[in-house]
Length: 509
Image (cartoon, rainbow, N blue to C red; front, side, top):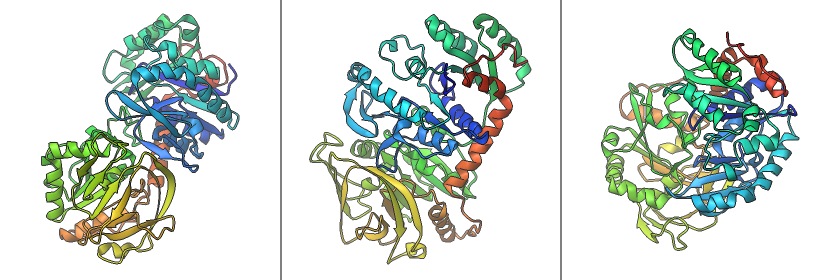
């Protein structure tokens, strides 16, 4: 093995591959190496527009941030964006090539090997080492023939593999043993270390099992990572973020968990604001006491709007706006706030037209072509409380189809990239507004102002602390993550494996 790469694979989804890759990237960066992440194929609705206007998965963007380098589609050459339970949009090297069923994609996948190999080789040539992430499990024996992301990728990169098992649901030793033994011998030999993740309790209780596992597999255990309370962006297909509940905040924010929710990384900072509880919700009853209601982006705006109506959430959002709650839409959620959504080309749905929530005075027309671009915004409002924020600069990106035709009831407040046409608009009262800009809250300043407006209206004291930016928040969490993993992972063993050598059995003792 050439010492240019290290690959993390798992016994299944949600075992912590993305998080451990981010941790190791940050550690290697701290140790003076120039490193980059790579994942051949990512399935995600959380995506990102690069500086070239190309689309990639957010998980590798997060890992690039941990590594301190600019994100590039070379780090994620294939992105699958589910459009339904059976079909996904396939994005190759940052551009969509069409929608496919699972069967169609499996047949097409071998054609992607050259694109994946070329992206990897270009990336590898630019850094000291690449940290590669697998997907799901390498032991999915029904999918081995067309594989491009697990052992096939390890072979293409000549990368040693560290296998991760999640102890939290139980059965970790069976999962690790079974995964290894379902692989052919040459692939078993590529696994140079084992990590047990999400451990709670006294590791001494685990030690007899570690000893027996090494005896059975002759693969060294190089780390037992504790359960970590760190807030790092995870893959949306396996995220546990939606189930978390925060309480006790004086200001209550409810983020509607749409069926095809996308780019919910826009809201990771919200709960860090002092005195704020921010939770994802799916029931109308959960909106009734909300001070702030947020409609996020979605891969299928029209279908998710229909879902809101069927579940009674649409009516409750309208009632919330009428009682004076702050209602905010981002991207697809912004489109839902309008009067009509029209899809003459059926680029979004089979439904040619649907009534929106009618909270903002505009119509939306969808087109097949998608806009993917990094954008800079400036608040310039002539009415309402948003005037207080005039001149505020916001950075982010756009990933959407559809254009808005604004009516006279709209109050423009946000302009992107120096355009004379507004991107974001509000209602006359200023309590309903939206924008296509992902990253709307990342500076911290807009969210801080929204929360303080709610505090004023409820007779609460405003907070004076300087708002935390998303960049500051991420850096803090990356360093916390790296510190925990460094203390619980045998770094000498990891460096030996990275350089093409061997770790010793029994080092965990």
